[in-house]
Image (cartoon, rainbow, N blue to C red):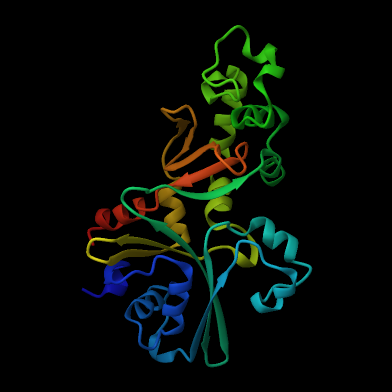
Length: 282
């Protein structure tokens, strides 16, 4: 069966980082995986003149704007909506036509399957998504950005599980209902922003790699970002068993730990994408 139609395979060696993936694309004339990925993107290998893949760092210096094809005017918006995970910009030339593809790389393994896809302060998400002050208050109490002890009227006489923050089921019912309603009604834009992003550095494709140390192989799956968003964002919006929030297969929770313990974070299990191939019968 043509692996370019399958969208997933297992290869020898490890390439579960952006540097090696860039090297594979840049060696596309000889690299079998890179050729398959380009075919999945819809390109005819025989018609490609050159491919140039570069790693996009988490924070781009203003002095490097030209390198990544970013204008000074677009800089702030691009940095605001750029994804925080590893991204690769792929420039493909076919004759006089120049194509740019942005790839989001997710690394996973069987014993540490969660992957953070976005984290910010609640105020930043409020600015992006426009939720009201009740929801902002609830989310800040949820992350611990606001101390629950300063809001006794919202807690009453209940004994909290954690004095530093509130779990979703400990919020007043009207705030909890607003939060659930907001993420149900705005699921599309939320999933888009945390998985794809916006603007010139938004992701077009998702590559999930899973390295097996025992046999030193890498299993990968390569999908367009809309397929990935439909998979991870599909399903109910509900409170999780740990009293955080499920948005389909996406978990919204308090960041915790260091640094940024009171930021809101969104996580996925990248390996879920492999199950998509099984359902498709590949």
